[in-house]
Image 1 (cartoon, rainbow, N blue to C red):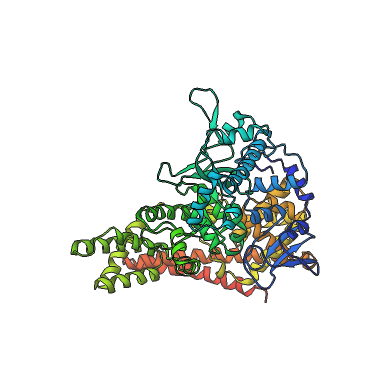
Image 2 (image 1 turned 90 degrees about the vertical axis):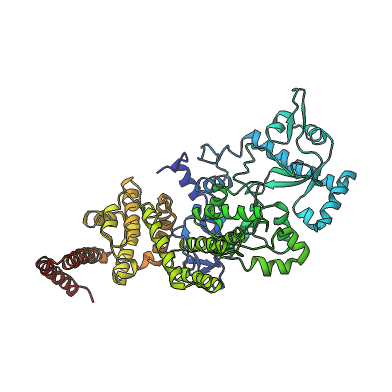
Length: 623
């Protein structure tokens, strides 16, 4: 199976060139524990090691958070890479030639022009930083930064610099080191003169903030003026290196903290991020002078589970937070909102009240999305007059109705009832009415967007198989043992395919079996790590690694395979019978309500043989 434009042979070579213990050992301290290696999980906080690496199978699995897979998946998770990026990273480490174009990655890092552009940016950042600290013009900018509460240590840590007023200071510096002006203009460092007679520095008389890509390389700049001239900030234009809709300031440094906290703090400005960093908040990032985009949210979703929005306390900042919430939710993130006094930004709050107060009163006590929406709505209504109060309450009830949890709804409705001296029951009725109307207009779709192969599984879904908790543990164990045997033995997989097909009880097990059938159909031999590479579903990868580690090869009993197949067939049959009985009972209830007593009686008679069949199956259950 090929992945995009990456040949499968390349993926195989990447895996062969990277012993998983060596790769994981660069990030996790591993100690030998029998045939396994164990350590503290890098993906969640824990005190007792639950992170396990199995050298024999070349896979990892964490018993705590459930993450698992092969060496490629580990690099994806630990570095926040996409699959193509992880393969490229490992290939470069192994000294393999990059001969493919992975989708969505842009040009190869070995592109000479791109390399020169990165080099020029790194050199420009050092040049600007030197000028800030050592030139006469730079002293004014340095004094400005110190006056804003920045320290010399922070200025050095973030490589903040200064672009002087001269038209060609950077141009002359870089050209003297062999960089062509045409390349520098394409990279966004220079601008072409209107008359076509040459080039000038793009940034002049501005404090310079280097912008780094996810790998830490400087890819652009944000230049800030020190007076009221416009624009206040000037960014590098869109280039091969710099795409502001995809870049997050300080992401390269925050990622290591993301892995532990599973939480990010999203600010509006560079100064906010830097001042928060000085306050001890190391998981802060900011968009590049633009509104939050889907690409930003997707990048964050690779690294964290929740995002705390810490935007300015003015109307514009709160409106921006409102617009960011659905973007984060769409990416599967849990948004929270840190509240600042009206008109104050994080930078000002830290400067005025100190780091400890900022962390304690703002960051450590964010509010839920619903609470923020209520507060935001309240700011837009005048609550002095009766009309304003009524309009706010009705809008607030509509906000509460967005919640699916009746308990959560009641919490907020009680607050409204107490504050405005209104009947809780009337508020509940209005809330339920709005909720019901929205349910009618909500488009039909799968409740589980990530369910395997929705089209092919439509029939199974329609049969309403029981939830995982309704299935006896015996049959779950039987299925897991059977799948483990299938992953270790091609002939077992063939036998299961012929006798059981997709009649597993758990839907995830159906999906995993389907991947195994396809894997062996392509002529592959049993190979756990290679099989896991063929699974293009994070949840199923983790399931496969969990089964392989829990069902150790030395403890597998292949003689159990026939009885396991029979057990699963019986349980599937019993589930189908239960579903038929449920349908008939509902039909009988409808007949009774319509007064058709004879029809209802006949249906109850039809149910009796089905219930007897279930009893027969139960009597044959293994003890």
